[in-house]
Length: 76
Image 1 (cartoon, rainbow, N blue to C red):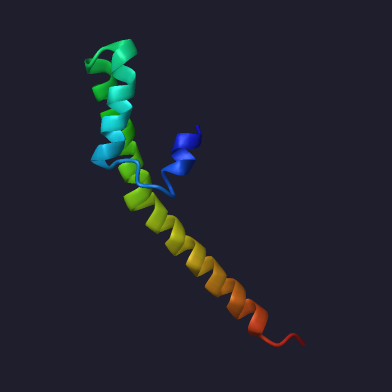
Image 2 (tube, helix red, strand yellow; image 1 turned 90 degrees about the horizontal axis):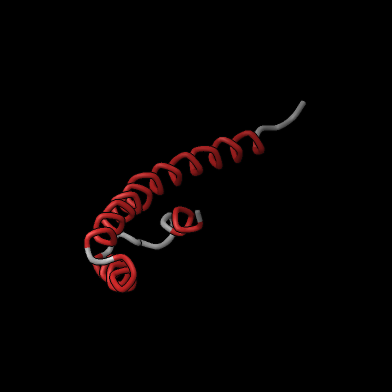
């Protein structure tokens, strides 16, 4: 589960990450299974890093802006 959290901060979809994953699993599982699993994890990492991360940053910036505006208003 830490892989998905790490995908928010580190681009795990890059080719060298996929190559390392496939080469390390090939010894145990053969060649096809690591390629399929690595591609699926890479695509999920791309979605998390390229789409979900900017959306999360946008929502957080809007929430911070709303919080700072509400703190600046004088209280009666």
